[in-house]
Amino acid sequence: MKKRIWMPIKKLYAFKFPQLMGRILLLVLALFFVACIAIGASISTSTHSSSITHSTPTPQQNTIHYDDIKETAVAGSVKVNVTLAEYTIVSSETHFHAGMTYYFVVANRGHVVHEFMIMPEKPDGSELPPDLQYKGQLIEIEQIAPGTTMTINYTFSSSAAGRYEIACQMRGHYLAGMKLPIRVTK
Ligand SMILES: [Cu+2]
Image (tube, rainbow, N blue to C red):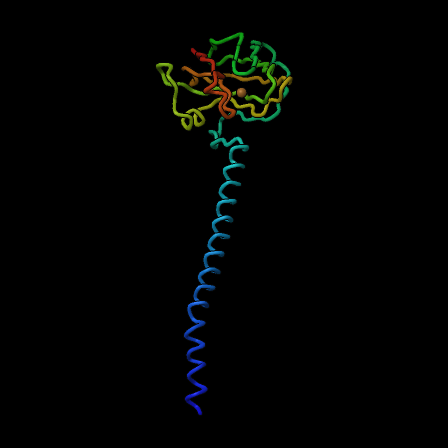
């Protein structure tokens, strides 16, 4: 009697076992797919947000860094008109003197946001890698809206003599042509 009952149960388990394993496998696969989708979504979100954010390495402490600045000209300063557009930078002055104060009038005449930076070049005038440019930058006015004008007084220090460039490092703008070599001499 015992044997008769026991045998069918054993057979039942023997029959159900592969089905059970199949279901567990399916469940594991489903969880794996969900995890993959979640990871994929988080990666695409982070790439997406980084493409919007204008990532800037921490500039040197002596960098004048502004988003919005409208100063009035300091007495005795030399006015410099800078015009930003897609994708050019025009400046009324490209030769500056160390120790002299300049009044930069930076107008965005384009249709997109631009920025105004003064960044170092190599002594021979060739480009530095971007991280080194950021480290040695003198001025940065970020996020200049189309149709607006920012004004800033800036005095080149006596140790600032060298080759620089006025640049816009908004994504792709620099490579599109938004750089203008300038020189600071004693
Ligand atoms: Cu730009």
